[in-house]
Image (cartoon, rainbow, N blue to C red; front, side, top):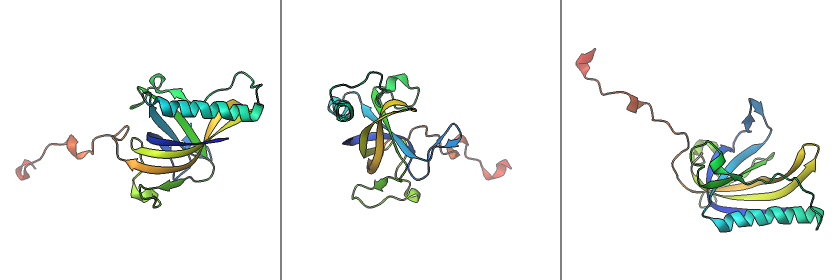
Length: 170
């Protein structure tokens, strides 16, 4: 297993206070996807190196073929903000540590962590080779809020949909 710190990445599909729901079912896990700009070749290489190191740790020099890797090309996804990025999803059964810039804990009602904000994320890269498949996966340890960003999928606030009405219009 290799521990990584992803710095100043965008948060997407955060399920950090409640379990992730997938296809209408509770996965029993907390999860988030992190977007890394393709121009950040150093961060991407660190993930690729961690994947290779985890495989080598498990299998030595005889790594079997056919492992699915955790990095996905964002250009292949039809989601807002994914173009020109790679993404990596991380999950955990235990609620991850969530902290603000000053390391104070973040609560759900703080509304600080949302899809589109920038975070630092602590993840572990590990190898799964069982009846569920052959994959290199990421476990989520902790997230630190870095700064606000444009929210993914944000809609107008609603009030902007209407015109001002005069008192005598009713």
